[in-house]
Image 1 (cartoon, rainbow, N blue to C red):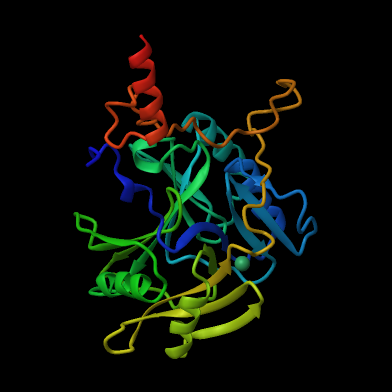
Image 2 (tube, helix red, strand yellow):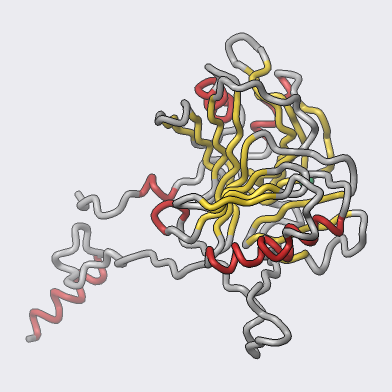
Length: 324
Ligand SMILES: [Fe+2]
């Protein structure tokens, strides 16, 4: 029997393989550019939606989509990892004047900078932390939703049973919370609150799933599908109590198969520190991942001592010993 050298289950993703984008409508593309591109330091997708009717913004391997329309606001906050707190604060300070008549604001906390977009979406921006966020130095590791009391456990059950996602419960001083794994180092968090919550306004998030048909069948049985978008995508909104059928919380989910043409599309991320007056040739692109390693291979150097020596290697070693 081979010794347990690795935590194999730690590498399991469950059915959600990536949280790719969030979508909020915004009323003013100019103000959004000031906040998301200049202030936050993100990059506008140069290839899709280059006009004033929509903007896609790249954050590592994730995006925020912003079609022009009435402002939509996530009920909770969005977690961001970006290097260099000082540079972030300088950039946010720099857009203060342009965003003066909006909901924009920012504040420093010990482990993050809190920032609000011109229409009220809230961000907690952390510096890279491999233990907490994995090997990224730019990305969108989580979205945390504030949900009504006594719903977190039931929400976890819904994602586990209907969507096939991996879930776990967290209890700390900030209220009971359900964590739903959304691919490598990404998750949705549902934290209970006693505070009144605004009505759901139609914002959405998009995830890629490996099992596309299974959740669809189960959602259809519950009559929860709201849109059969195309071959590779469907949508639903209601997260329901599987015992009573009662709606626990609403978010529009875009569920995409991994055969979707946009899956794993490479995204351009610029280095926001580059300026025309302080320029590094070759320094335009941001490397948004940190070094990762699969660790020691676990290969036994002596095939005779290997827990289950491959027959050919074993024979070869015995032959070598015999002729020595
Ligand atoms: Fe979308």
